[in-house]
Amino acid sequence: MTTEKRQTAFIAKVLNGLFTVITVEGRELSATAKGNLRYHKSPLCVGDEIDYILTPQAETAAQIVACRQRRNMLLRPPLANIDELWLVISLFEPEINFLQLDAVICQALQQQIKIRLLLSKVDLDNAEQARSTYISSYFNQAFKTAIISAKMQQLDTITAWCREKELKVALSGLSGVGKSTLLNTLLGSEYMLTQSLSSKLKRGKQTTRHSQFFSCGKIWLADTPGFSALDIAKFRLRPAEAILAYPDLAEFTAECYFNNCSHTHEPKCAVIAACQSPLIRERWQNYCNFYNYIVSEEKKYVY
Figure 1: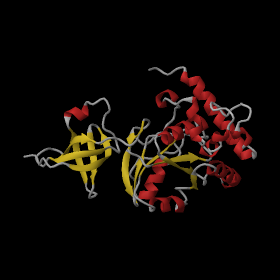
Figure 2 (figure 1 turned 180 degrees about the horizontal axis):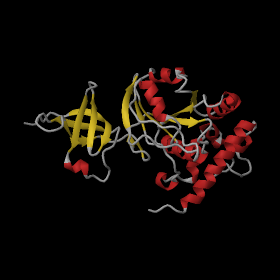
Figure 3 (figure 1 turned 90 degrees about the horizontal axis):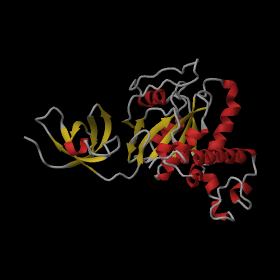
Figure 4 (figure 1 turned 90 degrees about the vertical axis):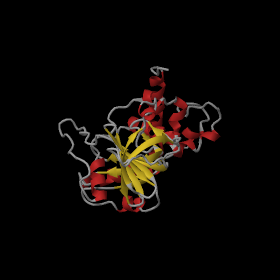
């Protein structure tokens, strides 16, 4: 006989129509979803806050009967109610694709999801330390940044982040930058299959097959499938939103002479005027590339 008392939890894993939910007490339960939730136009996903009832006589321990309103939603990969997005960026290979990175950052900041950056694989070539320092300074203009190496156990900063406060965090990045290796190191055991980079293609082999939350210190950490192809159309970004990916430049926009300034070429643009150092000017140039890319892609949007 089904116990009808509703209780709250969040979805930590979705695989083949089955759900793993974490209760407010921290218990892990297997669950199915009520029919109207299985076939809803916005399917349940990892991170959803849900109501469930216990089903002791069924094959699973619980049934999800309702889904609460989402605070935010990442489309790629599908994750709900995320507090922070930690982006893993390889300093060497695969090469940093700023268009892809800016699109993901923009999608997150649109929805009030904070960004932290993890610059990984500093153990590949010790002679490249100068590049590591420069790239770190480049991103430090706008976001909290840590240089890490899972293989060499250089994880002091990220370990400290995991102890700060309770958060739901998505770990994402290009395929092959070492997300699964990092998660395995943080959790102390082999939770995910990992592979080395393909030296022939210089492109990561995607090893994470689904999104899933793991307990790590005070946070819940989701390792997500790596993004390997830019799809601005899915994000529905507008040219005016491109500046979101550059909060250090965005702080000057209120001083621009024109209200509709694109910050790419206009006279009396406060953003352009602020580009006094080579580092800031490089960030502005990448912003311009991102802005122009959205302009060209916007014509392909289908409504």
